[in-house]
Amino acid sequence: MKMPVARTESAKLQLIISTYKGILDACSLVFTISVYLVPSMIVMQALTRFGIIHHVGTWMSPWMVLFGLPGEASLALLTGYVVSPTAGLSMALALGPSLKQMAILGTMLGICHSAVLEIPVARRAGAPVGVFIGTRLLGSLTTGLVLNLLLV
Amino acid sequence: MIVLEVLRDGILAASGVVFRIAIIMFPVMVGLRILRDRGGLDWLTQRLSGVMGHLKLPADAAPIIAAGMVFGIVLASALLIKERERGQMSKSQMAAITVLLGCAHAFVEETAVFSSFGANPLIVVASRLTVASVAYTLIVFGPSILRTRLKSESAGE
Image 1 (tube, rainbow over the protein chains, first blue to last red):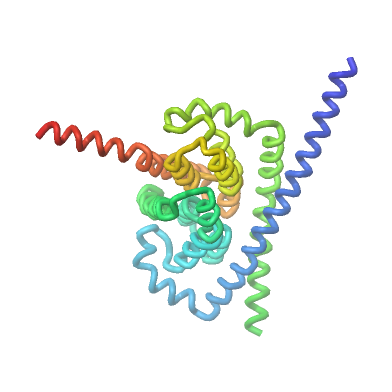
Image 2: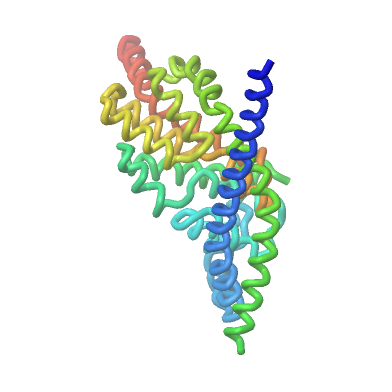
């Protein structure tokens, strides 16, 4: 009769340990996100204040309109592709996007992101870099176009 | 003064977003850790093993794909490097796996992050899976389909 009790106690302990580890994982992730988020928000505030974002927006809007995004979102998209999707989405958030725009941008960055980090990792694993980047970039842009047509 | 204002506005805007993200990420990460510690990855690997044949991959690829789809491309790459050292998988099979995981990885964590920013999780997951499937099909099955079509065309002439 002692065995099941011991097993239950061990399961409870395991659950507590897993929860503790999960909280640590979450703290680490939130910290990592903050590291990207705070500078991105400050940069976006500065770019907006000095009118740079307006110029970029005007210049890029003929292309970004294909994805249903404002021209200013091109900076967010590029940052997401190269640095991290969190940094890109943080920049986009400062522009006050609609739910449709956030869905499109989130999906585009979900498919292709963090080139700086993921390409070297994939290369070490033996991935053909050209195909790896090409499929992701093409998939991301095509999905943006399609979602812009499908979403209301 | 402008610099201070920019810093203040940026930090205030960011702290609100960090709080919103934390509310979503804590339960997700705890759930993911419990799933991992309770053998969730083994369960998923077993389920995926049956599908590997249809994907023209050996059963050894199942844990790599499961780890990549749940935990991310870094862990999957570590497993792929080990697999390369073992030499059981061909170069083209490994390339196909990296392309598949390139588009569709870290579903739980990344989807939670994207949805905490306001993106629809269903659209994000469905689109990533669709793009990954199309890319994989083109790379793995595309050449043989093309060869068959060319053969049948030349036979017809």
